[in-house]
Image 1 (cartoon, rainbow, N blue to C red):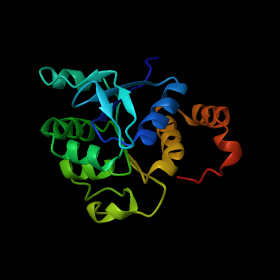
Image 2 (image 1 turned 180 degrees about the horizontal axis):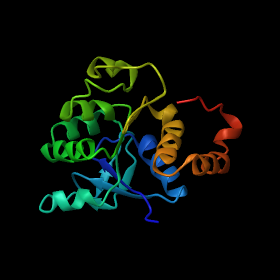
Image 3 (image 1 turned 180 degrees about the vertical axis):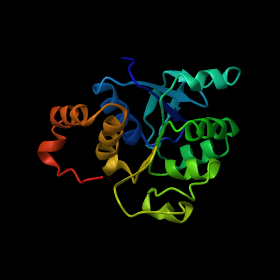
Length: 193
């Protein structure tokens, strides 16, 4: 069986906790993740941590490139969100995943990027609470799943968000295995999302 593959789309100003924790947990679950920058291969995160991405986005073969992925992940960070909102190829990427009914996941300011490029009028979603006016059907919950869309609120909800994504891409057993191995299940009550 083919391993699920996730495209993590980033730029300078990305929130490092949301990016690294999510990618780490997905990889622990046996899910392939490519961190792809729309800018340079080294991105400077919101708290000045520098991350070397796996790839930079190549626009020549964009349609073919995005077809190899099963899910899209957009982490937060206000500058990252602004960069992605102003990046026309991000619109093409989001439309591809939403229209193909592939999994689209975003956290913190990330859901506002999705709503900018693909109106979420018919989806329930959440985001960083101060940005809730940008989400049409905002829900005050740590993680919200509505069909192929998974959204979350911020750094503190990253573990729960990533575990929900693991469950969606693999299964509950894998989610539980990763949750136990990282001691998340032992120390934090997992809410039902």
